[in-house]
Image (cartoon, rainbow, N blue to C red):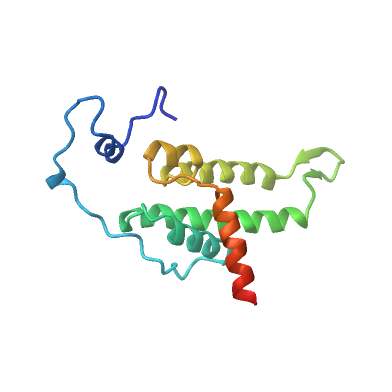
Length: 159
């Protein structure tokens, strides 16, 4: 993880009117990248397909050039699901034929895999901190008025 304060995304600087006054890249040089396609690769299992669906539906900042990283992330979720099933059918502590206890290797493999998943989530801007750093999205809670309007619509639609 880089030390220090993360850089402000260029898009945010443009929105704010470039408060720092430093030169920004020329807008004419900015390339619009095609969004990542929502068709999941064939090799993905159920867990990977679920992650693929959520990410491609909700993370509109991802480009087709991010596809290899997203595929890797989804494959790791499939592998994690496999490890979890295997651990459920085993014990976290195993014993040698002479009765010595040792940690189930799946526990360490799962921990390593989850660290790799966290890094990929971060690289794609899929954690709250990274979304803030990129300036691409933020969670907005419903206001009280929005909740009341939604309830009113539900009642009138159901009647």
